[in-house]
Amino acid sequence: MNKKLYPKGSFSRMNYIVFYPEGRTPDECGDLPLITYLHGAGERGDDSSHLFRHAIPKLIEEGREYEAVFVCPQCPAHLVWDNVPEEVKSVIDSVAGEFHIKSDRISITGSSMGGFGTWMVSLTYPNFFAASAPVAGGGMAWRCPNLINTPVYAYHGEIDPLVPVMYSELMVNAVNAAGGKATLEVIKGFSHNDGIDEAYRNTDLIEKLINARRDMTLPAVKEIMSEHF
Image (cartoon, rainbow, N blue to C red; front, side):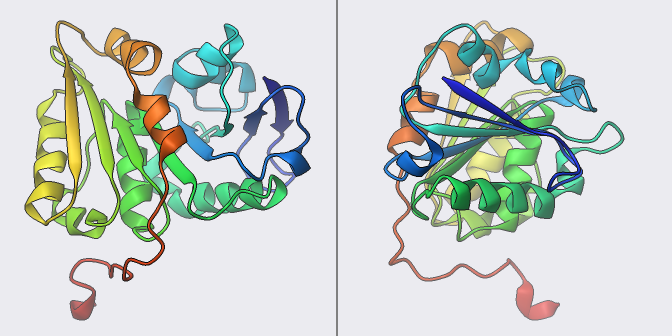
């Protein structure tokens, strides 16, 4: 796939990399979905080569091809994704504009710290994503009614000691209790890093996001308890 690096300072305080199919220019990607990938804690900082350690960037570096555009931002070293949802959204908006992505075809995924970030960004922008796929993540279950109109596909290693599977169970159960549609695939016999690799390498996670489309006729979802703010 083609690779384009956007160094921090050109638009954002974060580096980010965009991947798109060989044989296309950005102007020729308007029929493709845009998938955001948020990395884990070990890839933070300024060295963009660290983004290739795991998950989607690693698979693309190994030669996988997808009919999709991917944006992979790099979180600053002293922060976590939960600190910067607005900056993540700004990067997504910029890439969607440059690559002419349709507004109903934008999804998000991430692993470990990025799994937590995927929940946070999805909860913060409940009327934006076609689908959300957090891997080995967790978050604020009380906010999950925000996601009643966003399909959630969560994945988690069964024996993950760093982020126990109960974190995903709490979130998925809360989405479904509110009337949403969330699934959790517990990857049997897998731990943390190997569970993350398995989720992206050998499940249908990426395929689900490529095929996702947001129903733009659904009513807007308000932030939970917003009437009390």
